Length: 318
Image (cartoon, rainbow, N blue to C red; front, side, top):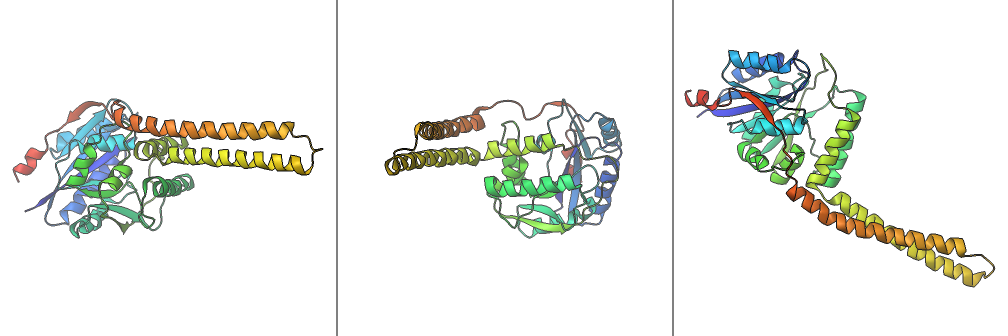
């Protein structure tokens, strides 16, 4: 029996590139036996005519679903929106700019067939700008420290996941989703496969420093309380430093009574009290963080319209 592969592609300023990505998916899947496929294109409120291009593709083909978000929610929210429309046994996510080679999807599917639950593409030579490469390295470090990512695992926006992983991701309804965190908390059977990475032919990356910082902050506060624990640890260390400095001040006064201690004693008290305040704030933040993670009900995304939403009927007929 043929397996259904669902491609989910967040789209932003990709009117000139998304058609080529779809063509490459078609060519790649024609060369693979045992699979049928569908494509879900999610327009993340792009300011250009991206959704018009998506609409035209949907009119030409019933195996392409077009989702138009009401405002810009970000790449990970767009992925979550796309997950809500997939029907596949395997879901493949990739970029809309053609830098992630859809033609090598067979490598990801091959690893899934070996028994892995999630497979991330790994690039030997990334063709991103220096800024994006630096951001990727920071993201790798933070994911390892905050989310417990294995050191040898490389994370990217090009990945394949089994159906149960996607279904588990959809159970997460809180705002500011972080797909990497959702994957890491769902399964440990995650691996890499090496693929090529192309240079960007059209336009520039939609990620700015602000967006990258926002993405990291959302991910780590939603899926880890380690930042709060670090704050607590810093409070403890500061309090200990203040206490030790106070002891040093008392000893210094006994050794040399002529030395004035007013300023030193004041600084010692301030450091100690400041450390205790940080400690208490860290403990309070621990609880607030848990409440925030559990009870924040802002929407992940808002769908303005959807074209060819029920594309599963095509596959029932095959």
